[in-house]
Image (tube, rainbow, N blue to C red; front, side, top):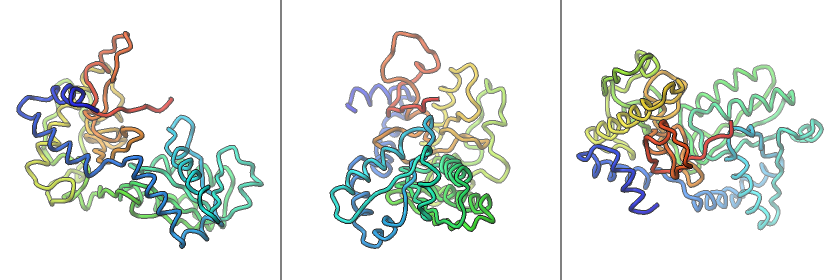
Length: 322
């Protein structure tokens, strides 16, 4: 990422906002970017923790992400396996969707590890499939992430407990990420650490045909402000969120029929302006973050595409193969 690349990206915003957005984005990335070195160092700490050794010896790691939902889990487990090979007495066992029933039955403890959890839906679907497909009961499932969001871990714990009722499954879900944790629960919206535009923070553009898609449900808007490590003062938070939301609506306007889950502040199945993610990784730019950071193409392929070519991304995003 060089100055020409950043200059091309920032030039798409209104001139009066460009320096401000650059400063805010730099501060955000300093606080929110997880590098490959961060991954490697954290895995080393996890493997080196003597209290984890008995768990590793009795458990199997799950490599059960659907093929068309990314490779973050597989990539993370490969790093884990590579480092474990250099340590005496640490053996990593993994199970996949194609594992035989007899092999899965050898274990009564499993570990679901992934890099970043945003909504929790992917982990919810994966773990539900695993338990139901292999008809598990009387087992322990540990769930942990390098980065996570507090509502996601709460949702995972409550929903999985309800789904697995009667199976005697013990869920051990790590509330915080090993590296990053973001507050995004409704009751703490004033100090939320995701982009969450305040109530009446922007008027929806006239071109929108289904305003209910981008209108938060009553009682779910952010109404107050408390400083945190991501947003240090109220004025800067509003200005940054407003600029990203405005850019996101411009991007959406260029698509004839944007998907309902595609929002200015990132993918979300809930009504509103989007998830507003503030965690980024070296592997990929998550689609739960504002569109202005990742929408578009780094390089043109000669085939015009108004929807993609309307914006130049700051960070590269590799989409799921679906």
